[in-house]
Image (cartoon, rainbow, N blue to C red):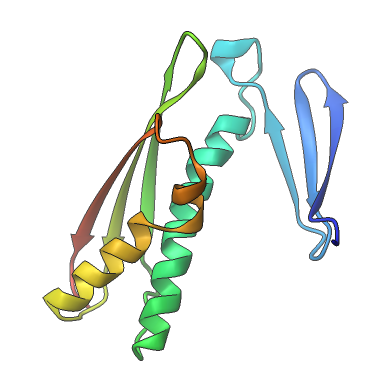
Length: 137
């Protein structure tokens, strides 16, 4: 199985992750509330953001299959931490969609987004909140 990424600990609670196929690099830091500088995504920020990007990606795939594009669709992400043990407690995602489609298709796309692979990979203890705002084209 080919490697996906390589992560190098750079010191001072910072990591550099390289996506090996593309060469793209992401830095991450420990957050301010956990001894870090907060100068980049924290590992838990990356998890929350991965949920949003996964939802948008699978929604985009389904829209493409139906003959339209979700270009300019955006997601805002809020991550709330919990304690005992320290973990992500809630991820709230608000998705704004400019596409003009039927109410039936909106419900299909919302279901696809809520059930993306990252969503299904996360603990059932983690609360996932999705809000969809359809503004039309």
